[in-house]
Each structure stands twice: as structure tokens, then as C-alpha cells.
Amino acid sequence: MKVAVYDTHKFEIPFLQKENEGFGHELKYIEGRLTKDTLALSKGAECLCCFVNDKVDAEVIKTAYENGVRLIALRSAGFNHVDVGFAKSIGMKVVHVPEYSPYAVAEHAVGMILTMNRKLHKAYNRVKEENFSLDGLVGFDIHGKTIGVVGTGKIGKIFAKIMSGFGSEVLLFDKIPDEIFAKSITARYTNIDEIYKKADIISLHIPLTPETKYLINETSISKMKKSVMIVNTGRGKLIDTKALVRALKNGSIGFAGLDVYEEEEGIFFEDKSESGITDDCLARLLTFPNVFITAHQAFLTQEALHNIAHTTLESANDFENGTHLKHQVPGT
Image (cartoon, rainbow, N blue to C red):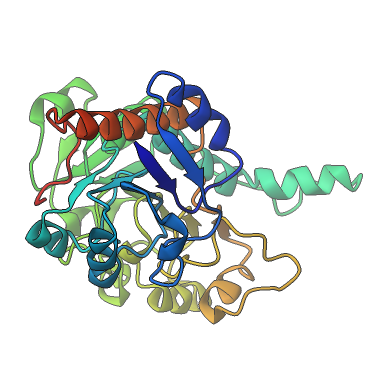
């Protein structure tokens, strides 16, 4: 099967190449992101393989279908960047990678917490400059603190289990509570307002939907402790960035750890060291000493890249052979 792999990154090519040895697809790597203007680069392809910042809107889907494309294979779990309804209406199949490595994302969230709390990034830079002072590096014990876990899918559950190991009180929120899981780690489900009120650390592990967009906003922040640490490894638009900036400016929150950003398209996964960034909100976030940002890196482990490559190419193989698509996006 001819597969056009958009927004290809150097770190994933070896995994795609290795996994493709078992499938034999014809892969064409395209560095640029998928847009209506770059669609012509996939001429002759039967499958468009897309990443998180590709623009898979109705216009792109319609044109791709007219060009003979019948499958869109996402190298991601999220599919909010795809016009799923339009794809279904014209018969375009869409598959994703619903589970690549929940451990990777959960462990990254924990790493961000430890980094911010114990100022590990600052300590590293100091010591490299032969500055061994400890001033300004005071953290707090995570043991005994209250952790709010918003969303208890596979990633959220792994994160909650890790945090319970610190001896923390773990509060869970999900539309579909799993009481058996909660009991197994001595945690409890509660409403979102109690998490806002009591949590010392709040970590977001929910998908982006119309209901969850800007879940963290001026109102919800006003209910939180002023020392609260907010961590987002989910989707950028779970947080209203302007409200976050205002809260950081007036000291309404203690820390923010962001692996995703609501306007990350065209910035994350790119080298902007020469050109700089023009996004004023992101530029402002980078000035705060209590903000720690990574560039959508939480998924980036060997195990995750292996699973992404295998699942994506397996789905292309299933489609080509006319067999059941195990990882079809709901609604398509």
C-alpha cells in the first residue's frame, strides 16, 4: 500500500522502517505538515499517515478522497484535528493509535512534577556553571500532599498509582468512575470542585471535547489553592492560556507544567532558536520561573514509538486486506 507519511520526524523513521519490514508498504516520508497546500505531495498515495498537528479538515479530506485516498491513519491517540463527521459522510476511513504507551505519558507527568518541585532544571544549570548554592531551590515533600487526577483512563490510572506510591492522598475525577481501581490504590472519586479546592497538585488526563475545552479557566483557578501545581500532558486547549498567564502574574497558582499548548501547531516539533516565536502567550509563559514547558514530549519513549509504528502500519495492512479495522476512530 502506498502511504504518505506527513510531518515525519527523524526520531520516528527508524521505528517505521523497522516495523514496515513485516508489512511491505511503500512509505513516502514528507517533512511538512498536511494542509490543503501540501496535499499534492501525496500524489498516488492510498493512505495519508498524519501526526498531531496535521490539518485534516473537510477540504483536505474531500480533495484526498477525490485523489484516491481511502484511509487516514493517525500516529496519535487524539483525533480532534480531524473532521470525523465529514470523513464518515464520504466513506473515508480513519484509524488511530488509541494506546501506544500510557506509561510514557504518566511517567513524564511525574517527571515534570519532580522537576518543578525540586527545581532540578535550575539546579542542573547552576552546577554546570560551578554554582553550588542551594538558595532558591527549596521544594516540598510530595508525601502527604493531595493529588487531583482529572481523567482516569489508562494514563490517568497509571499516574494515580505512581502518585499513591509517594504516600499522597489521591483524589480522582471521571465521568465513569472505576471504584475497584480506586480501592486498589486507596484513592477515592470525588467531584471536580473538591479537587479544585483541596488538591496541591492537579494533573490533566482527559481528552479534548466541547465539554472539556478550557476546563482550567479563570473560574476554576479561583477555586484552587494559591500554591497549586497544574500539570497538563493531555491536550493544550484543556487550559485557557490567557487565564493561566493572568493567574501566574498575580500569584494565583504556584506552578504550571505544560507538555502541550493550545496554539502549539507550527511551534512544537520545530527548531525556533534562530527565528524566535511570535506567539505572545507562549513567550510570556516562558518568562515565568515557576513554569516548566516541554514540547509535546510525553509520548517520546522507545516503547511508544515502536507501538505507534506497529499499530499504524498494521491498520494500513488490515485496510488493504479488507479485514476488520481494530483501531478505527469512533464515528467513522
